[in-house]
Image: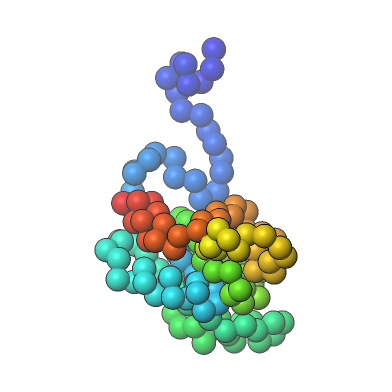
Length: 160
């Protein structure tokens, strides 16, 4: 007989997993990458979502400049990412997402999975897309949507 049939809860053992739904407020970190992702992230600051940390990294930097670019974004990104239950990277088609691997690495140091939210118009889904390729390589899960209004609604639902 399975553990669910016996009335006991299975031991998932996944780091960062919330065992009881809505057992405590969830902490969400959203990082806007590039111009479009930064605009969407800034829009979330006006939403009434408790326990939401928003960071904007609109500039690109590679190698040793990456940490400087992250610090220039303001706030304490490392603290917020390691303390969050859920971490989202937001970008739009054509955005510079060169910092995505660095941000994902910081999040993974706290054993947290990273979800990418990629906003692209339906007519632009064809052809090579470097933004999509970089996000896909940097995150554990990628959500592709055609309407940016989905992002605030999803974050609000997850944070409640």
